[in-house]
Length: 118
Image (tube, rainbow, N blue to C red):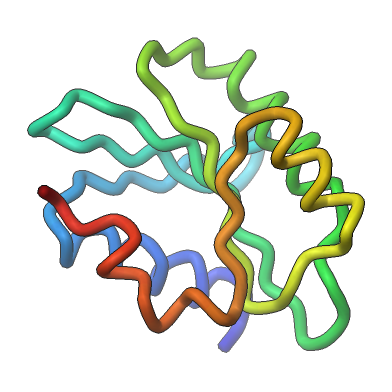
């Protein structure tokens, strides 16, 4: 799957569980690939996807998400990184410190349970 196809697939997974999922512009996205909204709870998810053929995803995903938070100024927002690979230990540490949710390749198939509406 190409990186843009992966992003579209992730957005479709959010839509399947009842979220509104809108991609950001391809250029000048402010660090986010999509803004996702839970219409029931009025929570926004600022999402960044990282698609890799191999290798772990580094802390740049965290930097992108923190930049996106400043760009989009959404109240009640969660920062979520999603990848088809695993993350480096440094990325995991930075995510925990900044309260960012990271979903890796092992969780993709359980996606609907992670974000299923309650």
